[in-house]
Image (cartoon, rainbow, N blue to C red):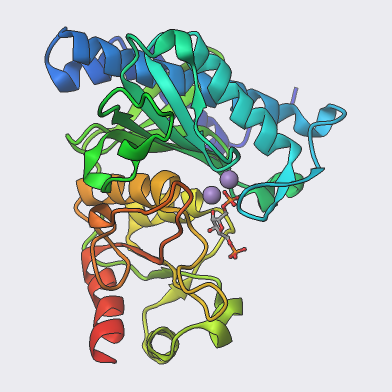
Length: 349
Ligand code: AHG
Ligand code: MN
Ligand code: MN
């Protein structure tokens, strides 16, 4: 048998397996450690995060085999409440979250991008005082080409009994979130979460079926070179955003990155710094992204990592929606880069 080149041997020998480390931390252990308690609320949060992790594993497993199975990829032919074409994976992932939470006993309501109205699990409602808000597949247009995708989640405590089934208590600011994060389906599957005590990332070890702690207390750089925006919308933006983009074009040190899935774009920015923008356009002044299950959870994560998220005029986490599926302009990332965009919006330079 041919000998492996020396450099490859070195690489293999130097690679250590974090999952084999006696001190490796699984997600559920981490949540309990964070809360430093075995109180009922800590147990609930740990169980909720475990269920989200299970949903992530099921979706990751399906995605990893999508090209080998019939009927997984492509469109269903339906259009969702957002007016967007629904992919088969959107439906599958939406149903995965419902079924894992049906068994949890903890969640009374789920609200998602793919459902017009909240979904109630009546048998959980007398005891399950939590609501899960989620985007089952973020970046759906990447699905059929085997590119990065995400899921976004947000957990809120239910306020009041919601006897009328209107879920009016969900129309409150993002500061009410008790946990939020995302799952990134990339070359590996990662889960990033916050319960208001910093931001932590985990990588799925598929052979163990466990999310293992990768990095604790992630801090976003104060500034980064990346700006992430769909420049195809240039002529539909307000002049202030166009001026900002002209500024990055003529200034050394900026580089563009845009994948079509904000979970991957914002994950890159969390780790390496920079700014992601989805501003309003002339036909859609509120932009495209939905507040409750896209912008607010990601804003919670980025703020907890020391970054910022704004509409250009107010913090995303202070926006009170009028409707479940309300959209909001989003500028999110490193503090210095967000402030720069803000200054163009507010002062024109
Ligand atoms: P979704 O797939 O949940 O509808 O979200 C896609 C979002 C976001 O992830 C991405 O950054 C953006 O829409 C892409 O939109 P454009 O194609 O308009 O750039
Ligand atoms: Mn999305
Ligand atoms: Mn989606």
